[in-house]
Image 1 (cartoon, rainbow, N blue to C red):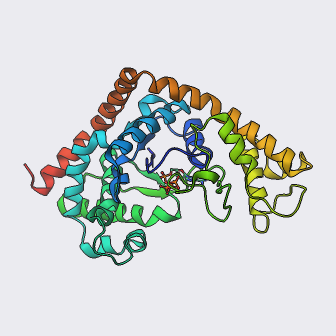
Image 2 (cartoon, rainbow, N blue to C red):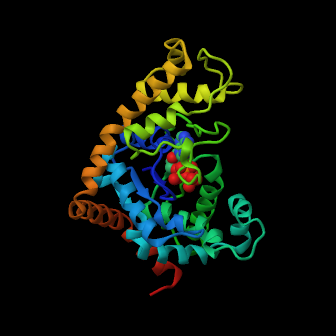
Length: 320
Ligand code: AQP
């Protein structure tokens, strides 16, 4: 069983969709679970009301994109279970192990005023994985150290207190295109980027999507060619077009003779790819009672899947 999450650190963007969500919707095993990792969006300054709204919106986007509602849940709906398991795992983890995490070192930058949760969130991530018994965790390079920690904690807990956890394996994610920021193709498109001129959000209006794509940074050439290293802007557009229309970036390049023509084609393809998701998301959000019912059902199913591991772990560690 695979477990994948998406953090509501901003609104869902095109990269999240083409790189992850579309794959999640298209493939995977019947047991796989996907979650909105809202607790992970609290490790730096955050706005509670905005986070709550984004978490609901992201849940709706995942369902609208085609992931079966019974495979989706919001992490904070399992806050009690995850909080209890995180504590048991923190009591299995050394301070040195947590402080060695590269992401912590990079993000904390040696400052003592950072939230303690920035140090401990890999333990919460271990709890996400171990509670649900995921044996495969798709992770990119930046998170692989955290899955190693989850493996170490699972092994240590099992050998110290008793066998309860499946030891997870990091696996290559079902990745699609790697989408770059339209205004700065040197960096990847990210939902939390402050200047959103180069970020297409899944819920952007079609007109806005077209304007952002028309303004995409390219280069001094005039005929499209796929060459990511020296022509990152136009190559990014070709990858986006390829991902939206099911062709290779090279094929997309061959079909266009000018940057202007290419940008219009990219805008059309992105708008048509996102249109049904946007429409379904808006209709899900327009019926909060139904969305809440789906959300509660997802949370109940996920909690039931983890219940026996949590109660065994707590009993084995001496709680209750
Ligand atoms: N630009 C991207 N191209 C392809 N895939 C991407 N993903 C993110 N950006 C791109 C994939 O989306 C999934 C969920 O992402 P996440 O929320 O776990 O974290 P992230 O990778 O940090 O996403 P963002 O949008 O860049 O968020 P912030 O701004 O908070 O850092 C992952 O599978 C990720 O690979």
